[in-house]
Length: 273
Image (cartoon, rainbow, N blue to C red; front, side, top):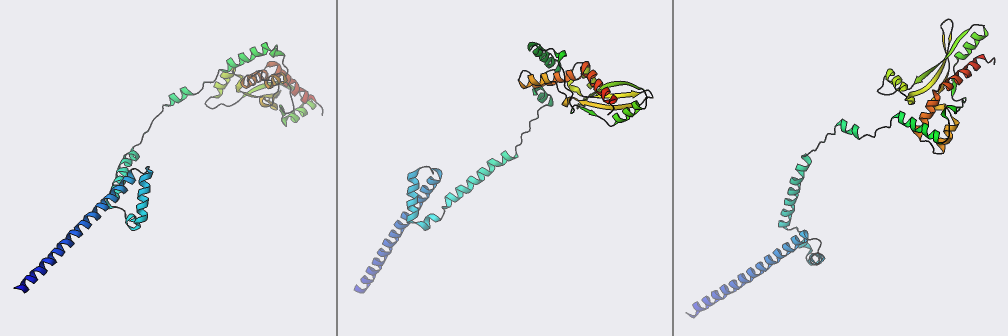
């Protein structure tokens, strides 16, 4: 009877020890789980609010104490990051697929282009400026330099015709126009007749013989044509560039200029050298 009581006491003692051990284990597990949840919440809070220095210092101190635990990324944080990447990808895809195309009518572009001032208006203003400066446009004298006039090899054939005693016809001065994109030859001539002297490129001096032969003796280009008085006022700023160019072109096609050009060609033909 006493031996049986001793066995029961031992069994009760063992059960009591087991119960205490189980309770201690449960308490430790609960504390560990609470600590894990606290760390996860603090790390998630750090990802959402990275600008707070106190939280960064607290997490850094925990990283120093428990390096192995911090290196392991929380499962919930990894899932949340993956979910954020999916949301960003979904928000970007519609933007990439969208395309906006805007068509601007050609008439609208042309209407916005700066309109060029009419040549006749520029020329009239330039002539008034010369009057204000006390200059007579008709009295301006050009300079025929060696660069302005180019004599062709046919000059020597004409000289031989003269030396042989054959009579030559008149010296005819032709006005040659520049080619303009979008304009036909007739339209360019019409612009010249309406007063737009900017279409002139050069003058040609031709000699026609009695037997119908046509010799191109010399050419004079507007680019190398010089009027010293106009050049001086342009350098002084009294004339704008477009005004200067139109005045020079107008003097280039002047009747007096063409006659001087013809005299120079005739003198070169009759020169015995």
